[in-house]
Image (cartoon, rainbow, N blue to C red; front, side, top):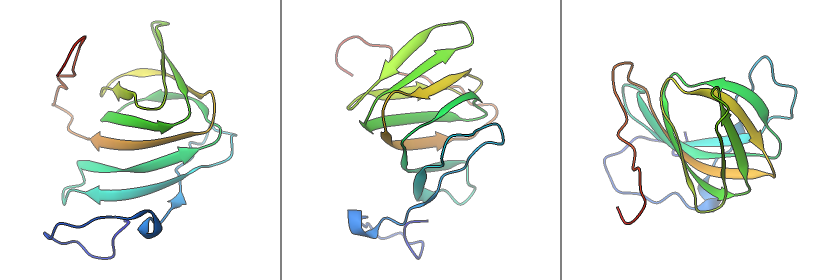
Length: 133
């Protein structure tokens, strides 16, 4: 984790405090690994959030969890199993619900802030837009 101790105190993780770890690489991946930092995690490990960055990533995915990612830098292209294509870049929020399947491809080096929620029975009510929240 990014912080040495768990606490109920409010805290700020500054850029110099971030402890980057090698990002997980799937057995089918041949692209160089990236880095990530888990900023916070619930005691039951069903919720977590952090930072992720990777120069190149091209891989098929099957989400066993809900992920919401805020793209900080770069651009990514995601194609679902039905052939629907979305792209996300800086300032975009990318939602990949539990059970979604598709192909992820970095179009440039990507840095994102991610949140993951793992609950086998939980649905995700995502914002459908357009307009204000």
